[in-house]
Image (cartoon, rainbow, N blue to C red; front, top):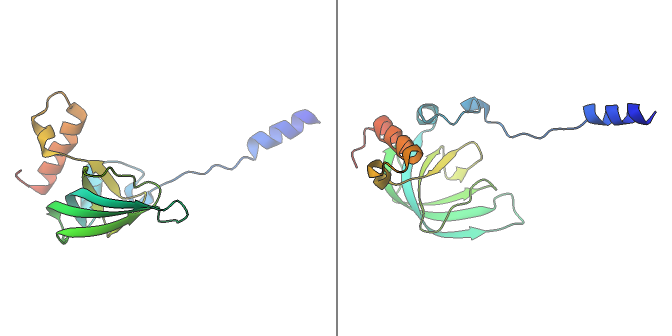
Length: 137
C-alpha cells in the first residue's frame, strides 16, 4: 500500500514554470528586436525595493541611446522579481512599456565591450544589437 501512495505522489506533483510564449521561450535578440516596440540603452540613477508588492522594483533611468521606438530622455520603470538592476549600471532594454515583466529582455550593456576580445559572449550580443539597430557608437 505504501508503494502505491509513493508512486501516486510522484506522478501528482505540480510544476510551476515561467514561459514567454510570444518569444517561443527564446532569448534570441532577433526575435526580441522584431517583437518589442522599444529598444534602448539606459543607466540606473535611483531605485526602490518593496518586498510586500507584486511590483518589487522601481528604477529611474537616464536614456543614453534609443535604438528603436520613441522613449523620453528619462524613464521610471517598474518590475517584478525578475528586474534586479545595479545602481549606476548600464543596460539594454527590449520592452513594450515602463512595466518590465519576466518576458521583457534586459541585459547588462556597454559599447566598450566591442573592443574587448576577452569578453566574447558580451561582445557578441553587443555586436548583434549594433547590427540590428544600425547604430554607430
